[in-house]
Image (cartoon, rainbow, N blue to C red; front, top):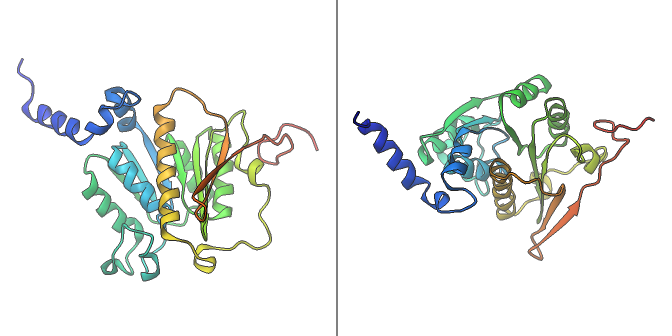
Length: 256
């Protein structure tokens, strides 16, 4: 039986698109298939979510669910490079889906144009292999942490402000959860617009979030739980080990 010419053309195109991945011993055809089979939910399409989405879509993630309720404003444009001035006033998820489809039309894009509540986050967890929280919002991250503990879904957290960024991969189970690492929210939380953020710091942390997600999909090993902190002034990374808090109100096992 002669092979289908359309199928052969698709395979050749895919081999060309992902040739840099296929050449890597740590990826190869088997690893690229893992990426293609993966489903990732991305919460937030701001300074962190834009670069994360670009790299995940470009890498060939099979399904990427985009979640954001916000509209594009001119103040976003310095660091949210999926958007242009012509997009001002449009919903970020709609613009992002259009641009990402141009980047790589092979991956399926799902759009959720809403502020994520507890029920929606739980549903997102159950429908995806991994979640990336790029919301840069403490309350949302706590909700994501609780849902991840309930479903056993791994997730990546990223945050940045001024010249500093933080990123971590959380795998529910026997390691420290987000609440273990960060405790309770301070009485006042600064945001990026108020305190400022260098655009490249957001881009670097967002790219690192995508890297952590892909590394988790590809790797058969389980690296030590850690929080990675980037200092944009000194160009230094600091790796902090995350310790499990047995009295954590979210995942702790010890009594009061």
